[in-house]
Image 1 (cartoon, helix red, strand yellow):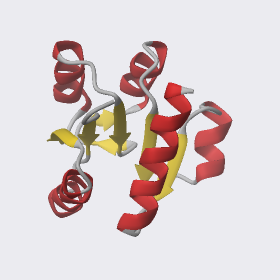
Image 2 (cartoon, one colour; image 1 turned 120 degrees about the horizontal axis):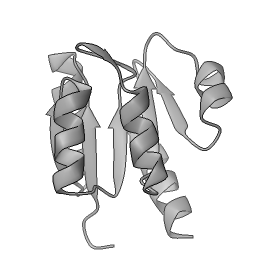
Image 3 (cartoon, rainbow, N blue to C red; image 1 turned 135 degrees about the vertical axis):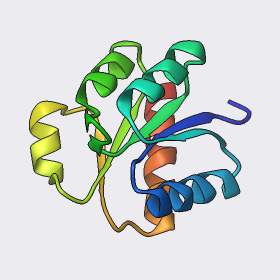
Length: 121
């Protein structure tokens, strides 16, 4: 995989741009940030990413239906949330990764790489 495409859906502008910068500086191509599930879904349908980082609570609702659609098409999903625990997410989506906000850039990048490696393997 030359330069994996990472879709980012995050409705907090500062967090969104920080997350995108972190991922882009590591050599990934960033799609987004999207602040709601519908715009992220449109981008997903136009160009399937290699991985998605989704805030659970987006403008106008949650990212769960978007995540389910992505996972159904074998796109790894990393939930990035400050309000939902990893235990709650794993109860719903045992194969998804979770990151709690705030999350250090090194942890974000390690989780992205692990998810991409698992998807390839």
